[in-house]
Length: 463
Image (tube, rainbow, N blue to C red; front, side, top):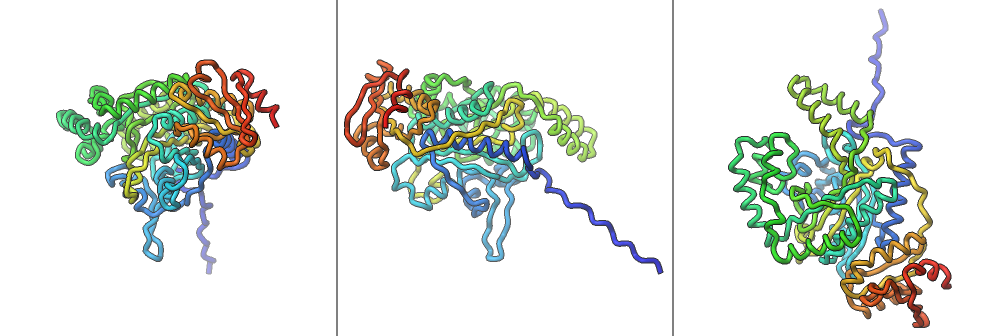
């Protein structure tokens, strides 16, 4: 009797949209994280590590079930004990959950945090988009001031610049506050209802459930209607308009290249006021990424689908590659159970997409030391130029911390003493006009006036 042949077992492969990162490629990821963390630390941010798994309600309570993230993309599971958990699809809601859970409201505000790690979405893999993807994020929680929005945008651009991506464009918009949102959504819905028979299937649902997401649609048939849709910035309340105007003034003072994109809304429900997105202009496309797309698209088996997908793939290959994005989320805390709103703003960088750029350069990070300087600013003119002064110190490898959202001299000096930082730099209206700072010895109370051009040398020489 012939011996029955055992079926050959296929070698297992990584799940679709997930991959192994080995050797020199892994070094690139570590190099990016260390550089990004270094920049964040120099600007007073501290690390936080959030769990890979969160309770499902962290995301259900902050995003409607009609959103792609909740309805289609989340990986969820039920434990033996009956708990419903989700692999984290984004970092902002978990960071806010940690802020509330650990009583950070009682600490000096704002709380400035950064994080890095893997996130998960059951999305269609394509160029720079995986089902397990890596992000670096920064969050400023506890400040309603426009300088916080500008700082998050500035640091995002600065990190990208420091790893070699010089040719970037920042899209920015304001979707307003609660007062702005109601009349705007009414007009937006009325406008789209006139064209409902010509919209894609997803947008026909969004009109009922989440009309702001109509502006986030990428379908070709919806683009002509999106171009002529009502704009959120035309419906801003006086407070929202003033906030957005100040954000733009800060971006101008920082000499950032940006454009107002009236159709930018971001994909998650909790955003309010400022939203932004950063793209590298005219990126090169990785051939292996296009080949992967082609294989997946061939699997559809429909001639029309293949033709349309090929056209969309070609358009996507020539489109700017979105690298980062974020915005303000003042109402997120209440959605997570807080008794009151907590103003906050944040942004995240898609590390996989950054590393796809041919311009990316891995940089060996510098050693980060305990801050030697506490930076104090006084008045609006000083605020406008504050980040320039901090950048002078960072360029000279001098760690610094600050409370740019505070206005009182005594409060800022008190924080410097509490943190036991040896020197304070005081930068007021007079100093901003004269191009100087006051360097104060926190122990002896002696102080000197120093020109900005000589500041780094002066700080390096003091003991």
